[in-house]
Image: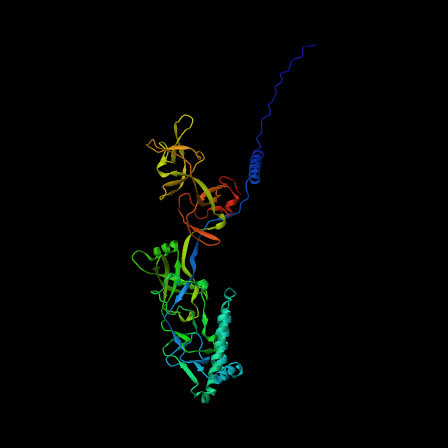
Length: 466
């Protein structure tokens, strides 16, 4: 048999086929797992997007009203009946009231005032108009107006009934015991006294302003009068004033509005009694050591003739900037470093300080973020992961050294544009109970459409958020 021939076997190496779909899936899976892990470990924070906004800046005060008031006094004694109501315009010789020294005629007039059935159509129409106007302007927030409405309504009814009764009793009034009191000057009538009738802005003093102890004497509540007793008063001038006490900060604020070259300025005024608005000429008056804002008006005096102290809202300027919720604002602690210790590194444009190492006394440059410089104190508010209280720093080009020992706080919010919290300081323009308006373009500040944490206390510096 012939020898078998050996066969040379060649092994074929199977080529590796790369499956692109598997690789893409693996990358997607890894990305998903990383994102899912970050989602689980990061904080869930409600986000607010910064928008432009404005706030109407106002201040509410209680002011003392001063007018030109003349009190008229009784020359007789007896029972009294009034034929005019508060706020009526009285011309010379117009009937104001009657005084009956014997009393019988006054009693008949008073009794007639209880019978509303004798009112004419015109009188009923006037009363209906009063009720309609009140109900149309009624507000739950101004319920106290119902008392002045009731008084005006009662006075209107009583005035009409008393006048009608007086006409019917004309034959009986021509006696020596019954006299009519008529206006001796033109003006607007008021039927109360309170001791402020002779006070003017020039005779005013800080001690006169006493809203908590104010008392008002209603003259119409009297059924009888004696000689020398006040009957009514007449306001003879449409010019009137409101005096408002100011503290030091408020005085400085209004002086700034007034300017150095002026002794007055114009300000918007809202009367809280009825929310009516007007403008007043404002000036600052000093009485002893106290400052008052004097508001001068030349209209609407009759509208508030029954008031002596009144709440007013001053201002109305819109402050515009970036609008953020107050819940987002937090206080952050900074290291305080004298500004003359801040320098720039030799090979860097960043700011920082020269720190002296405790181990060997050598010096190194440490970069810092300077958020704010207080020009009055001369300190910079800085943040740096490489600095802490107790570190010794050296003034540039000097052997003078300083140990960091103080901290200070700045207001700001946490920006989460990059997915983690970064403190951004704010410079407040104005604020109310819900929102704050801050400046744009400040160093380490906010920009329009930045995303910030709605609740600033829910996150910390550097913390991830989603």
